[in-house]
Image 1: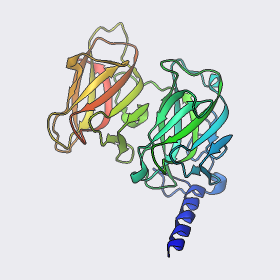
Image 2: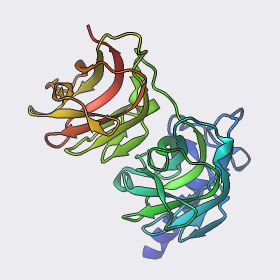
Image 3: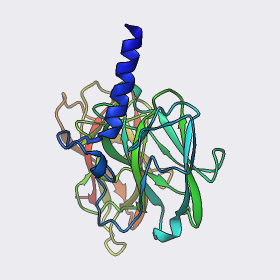
Length: 309
C-alpha cells in the first residue's frame, strides 16, 4: 500500500509539470507542444527563459516543462543573461511562473549573481497557487543595493528553509514598472517585494499580514514638483480583527513623518478607504508598507498617491 501511494504521488508530480495550468485559466491545460511560455506574451521584446533549460543545478528535478523538488540548499543556474539588453534607469523586475500549494508557500528563494555564494540581488517568497502544476505569475525587483545590474551574468536561484519551496515553469527579466500618480494601483500589479505576507483572493489582495510584514513598491510616482500641494496615500483595505493596528509608511528606506502612519480602522471584514498625508513629495520613490500590531492585521486591495484635499 505504501509503495502504491509513492507511485501515485510521483505520477501526480510528473503529470502536473507536463501539463501546466495557469491559476486564472484552470481549464486551459497546456499540452507539451504549447507549454513553453504558457503566459508571457509572444510579442515580448525581452527573452523568456524556460526553467528546465538551466546551465547547471544541484538537487532539483527536471520534469521536461518545469523544474521541481526544490528543497533547502538546492539551486539552479542560468548563464549568459545580458542585463544590458534590458534597459532600465532604475532596477530590473524578475517575473516568474511558479506553483506551490498553501502548506509549502511563502518560503524563500534567494536570487544570486554568478555563483551559489554570489551577491544576493533579490528574494522571492513563492505565493500559494491551487496546487503543484497550477502556475501563477509573481515578481520581485533585482538590483545591487540601489543600483541596477549591468553586464552579462549567471543568475542563480537558491532555495531556502524547507522542502518543496516551489515549482518553476519559466521566467523573464523586464524593466521596472512605475506605479502612476493619481491612479488606483492594484497591489498585485506593482509590488516588488513581499516579506511574511501573501497574495490571496485569487491574487487580487494581500492577506495574512502580521506584525513586521512588509509590502514593497519599488517605483511610485508622486507627481510633478511644480505642483506644491501636499500628497496623500490612499489605501483600500479591510481589517477583520481588532483595534490597535497601524501601518508604518517608509519612503526611500526612511520612515515618513509620524503623521504619515496609517491607523487601521476596524471594518468588520468589509473593504473601506483610509488615507494619510505624506507632505510635499514629487518624482519617483520607493514605498514600503510595514504592518504593526498583531496577527492578521489587514488586507490591502489597492493604493493611490494623490493630492491632499
